[in-house]
Amino acid sequence: MTTHELEQLLLQQPVALLHRLARGRISRHFHSGKRKLIDLLLQASTENRPGLESDLAALIEEQAHRRQIVPVEKPVQIKVHPRPAAAPSTSRPHKSEEHSHHEPPVSLHEWLSGIGVPPTQPFVPDAWQVEALARLAETDVVVSVPTGSGKTYVAIEATRRAMQDNRTVIYTSPLKALSNTKFTEFSRLFGAGQVVFLSGDRRDLAQAPLLIMTTEILRNLLYDAAGGEIDVRLDTLGLVIMDESQYLADPERGVVWEETLIFCPSQARLLLLSASIGNPQDIADWLTAIRPTPCTLIRHTKRSVPLRAGYLHPNGKLTPLFRTPGIPYGQPHLLHPEARRLFTEYEDDTGPSRSR
Image 1 (cartoon, rainbow, N blue to C red):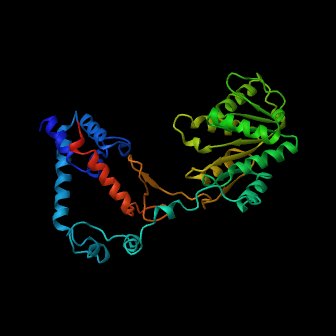
Image 2 (tube, rainbow, N blue to C red):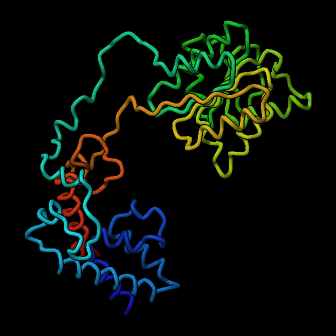
Image 3 (cartoon, rainbow, N blue to C red):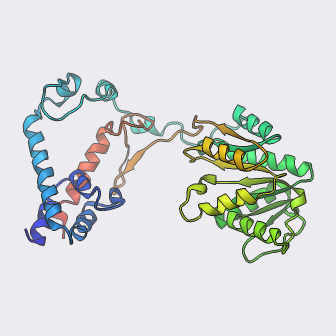
């Protein structure tokens, strides 16, 4: 089969089949459109063209076989009354999928409802926030909660209490831009003279009680302090906040977080904040093992700001991605009918008739 013939055959296939063909061949292939996906498949098959042709033929045959054995005119009956003995399309549908056919899919209006600025109301800290601050008075703390739950409140209140006790506070983040944003925010909260932002080209520590920097800068300062080259006022350091601490797992930069935690002065409390640590208890146990102060894990799983998934077609049409307002985790088959229609329209628009 020539390259042109293979390209034409690929153009005739639906995008879903091409994504199956791309598995194991192309990384992040779900981010590619049909034309780009075909180009990437042709490039990836340079060294193993027979393998690609064989897999493509098998997928086409499988697709044709399914069309023959699954009656098109009665798809709902098959889902509502599945029979194990009936044809190879395998497993019994999920109960939620069966149920979804009896419930109308969410409308765009329902899906968008509730989005906007919430009404003003008195702030009341959540129980986990109160517990985190109470624990921080006695132990190091790892806070693992979903995005938008209020980690920053814990950092601000812990900073306020440490400064009231005349203790120095260091706040770190993995990005200079994020640290700069926190410098602006904390300067507004505590006063410009109370906050200093340290970067690689600025070594003046001044006498501000709150120092903001990237984690690499803190690691370097601890190295320098150990050699007597610079004064970080370790004797007054009372709190070290490490935001986005999931960077401990970063293959390249994770060692910086590890070294910083290891060399951090023992009298300073550690407050690690993250929304995406998969094993926070392991991190808390490790800190307990390497430091004289035990570490407490504060974990909260309920998301304060719920997620919704939508699909925006290139023609400007917006629709819910799933039949439900929220994201049906583990049930990606519950696509919204309008989203399915737009997917098909996109495949038609990028198919052979529109190809170059």
